[in-house]
Image 1: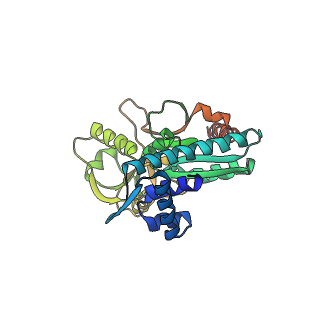
Image 2: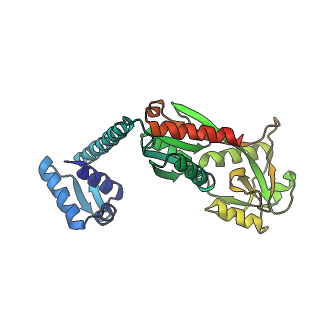
Image 3: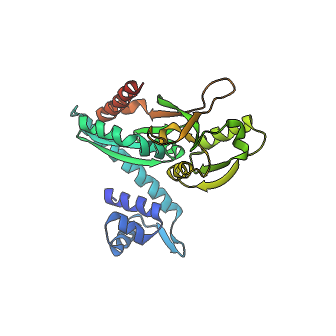
Length: 289
């Protein structure tokens, strides 16, 4: 069992489908099936079985998949540390980032970082902040850029705070919101909770939701066309957008804020390319304040 076998097992486990796994691995379906059969002979055990819903792993097959994942992680760490011994800023930076941050802020940051450190390879995954937090827990990422307040047991740096605002095409009054059409968008649960909590503390009736969309950009376009108001974080609105943006103020006269954090493990600073990226983000933070 070698590195290719680890990749075959993990990919098949993720896809649960021979055809899709073979496509991802750039090998033929018969070649993948043959290699699984050889592994079953090597370990003298059934690893997978085919059912109507795809491939199912046996208990022993599950165990081998976990072994394969651990070996992939150990090999990745070994390669990183060997590169690090050259004491030059190069290597593969595994980065997880909130989809919202990746959409509006990350491209420029990565462009500037790579202009300074062209030998660094960026392996980026984006998603909900909760998913990025899980990636860090599983050591699938060196650095996580997370929006909202999530528990993290190691190093964390507040990158920036932004205001959450009432967005509308024309000026509206907060006292009128319960009777005005609101456009909702699918977002991270932590932001949804913050907005819902503010509403419940401010109003005695639920909001009048007239539209629900899957993307914040769609929501913004609907608001721009006067079809309702929305509660938006500042990150998604440009200065040139013709929107009325009124920050939400809490009863204690503080703004309702959305925090963006940098999460990482202290031990990863031993890798020069990770340390360079953390330092770069901190310098970018200082420039923006």
